[in-house]
Amino acid sequence: MAKINLNDADLLTSTEAAEIWGKNKTYVRTSLRQNPDKWPAGSWRKFGREIIVTVEGMEAVTGEPDPRKKK
Image (tube, rainbow, N blue to C red; front, top):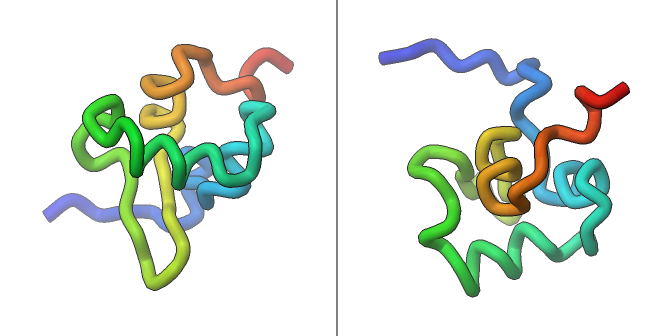
């Protein structure tokens, strides 16, 4: 089983991810409900009420690279 680094900058809460990509704070939750097939396997997971997503997942869904890497 692969080790997961929970301090990895490529793991984001749904709210953080939406803010970074300039989307509405409910963007991820809405996208998962309406278009779950757009999300690559393993690119999101729900922990309690919180959704954690990967940068890879956000890039796939939005079609935009990580805005933090432009700086």
